[in-house]
Image 1 (tube, rainbow, N blue to C red):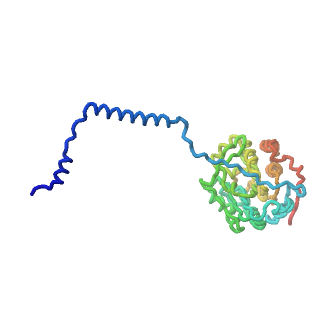
Image 2: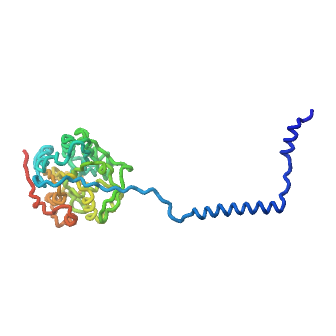
Image 3: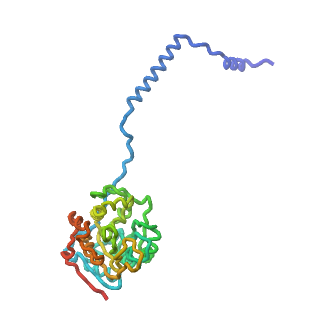
Length: 340
């Protein structure tokens, strides 16, 4: 049977042998290819730049000033002694003008206790849970929309907040514990001599008001860890590097974080082997709270329980020189009260 004519033509076309290109056509084709390559090269040369590739610019934040306006009508420091921590806190705050002076309705409040160590309350390595719980309740009572308690612990944070009793105290008082994870730090311009850009706990940036709740403790490097030193607990990163010039770093932190209020816990005092402690023999029961807007004066006053004088603590004079407060706490004319 003969093959259809259309299929014969198609098969012949597919089997057709291509004739060699003439010399003239070959030269013309080579010239076109070279011109095209030259054009592409020129465009590439024109578009090339040896400038570095622009990377995404990281946002660097600054810490707001959380202080409230000065008020000459009320005391600048209140010292209260007693047995009931909440009553003591209420009295101390009343002498400073009441908590409503510092916390208004709708404020987001950050409470910053010292919760650095896996210790029980009796060992006085962390701020007492009684004070943290009381301040949480008082802030909610004043109308705060949210009360967050946070710290950058040195031991396992879950164990620190649990064993210190602070987690339970905050939950029972209506607040929230926030343990910062690896993604919860924001690059912040600290503006210090030693501390420049540093990772800072994001909950500090989210707050409207910040209340510092340190505890009076001995410290092996500085002789004391008090209000200003407590700001170590808002930063991440390699904090051990700062110990090489610890007094400057403490002052840098105190200059960067200006709190709304500070209430010092001296109900239990760790007199020796700080900051971690561990032995009840190192703890002294003093049943005292001190509230102030001046952290330098507050730290200077609190040294009385540690057998240290202000001239033995370089960061105090350094802080005063930067205008952060007064070493002479007596100049504040503190009010003293004894309850029960």
